[in-house]
Image (cartoon, rainbow, N blue to C red; front, side, top):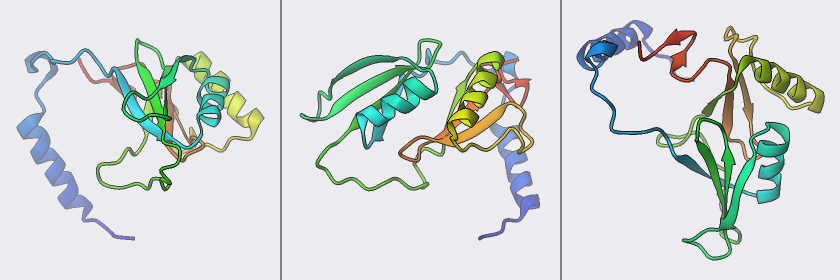
Length: 169
């Protein structure tokens, strides 16, 4: 495993923050309204529905043929705040499982109200689904993998918060 010079890394982060990170009152208004959906690839539509809808409680809101690839399905789950998590399957393409790589998705963090977060934690335990946290020192986070290995963080922090701190204030 490669080691890093943490002093140099911290100095670089400080340099970047001083150059690019403006106080909230001085930041320009964003051009975006939010993420409409993230589109990921799954190996099995029914297995994916079982995980996201039946286990995690994110309702399936659409199931159609992929308009760009005949025979492929495109599904969407409601993850709250008018945000969708989408999946394609690409049968018969022989796709390999993904690996963590530059340009890839490391994980998707989904904000869940604390009471539902605690209920999900119990459900994961009852179903024997492995997860990390909140024992890792992050009382607000649980990390798990979906059936295809996609990293999911269930975060009890509200939107625009990170580690208990509001990011837009």
